[in-house]
Length: 184
Image (cartoon, rainbow, N blue to C red):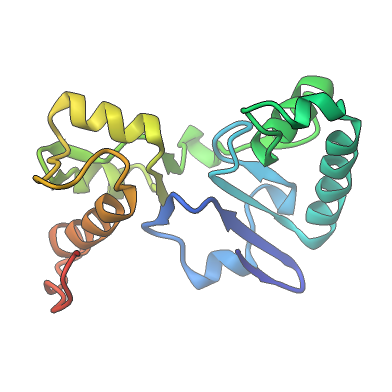
């Protein structure tokens, strides 16, 4: 989470920044209203300190209301489930991440035009700030042939593919150098 006394941004562990700047941390979208950029999936969230406090209280109340036997089920009650329940109960409680001009800022698929070739034009043109590399997105990219899975790796190695994506984005879209560290 990137925050300061006035609020900030939070991303899930499988969401990677591609264009969020320090300036954006102090100038939150939607006048600081709590905003989810992937509906009830907590891939990328922003809000003022007051909004984070408000939603934290609401989420705690949702979690407390869960039946104890539901907590023991294999699909545990998580922040995603709480956000969905909160949205279902109070549809207007939070904003959803469409910014001025109607552009979404979160990519929910691997942003490749072809195998391991980043679609730089799409990322720059649409004002994309982050990529959410979910389990489903990884499986889809592999099936579509835009994500190469090397021998010895599986779809579960999303940390590896995220490192690859950020590396390819830096080199292919930003003109950066190939870093000396390995992807291992």
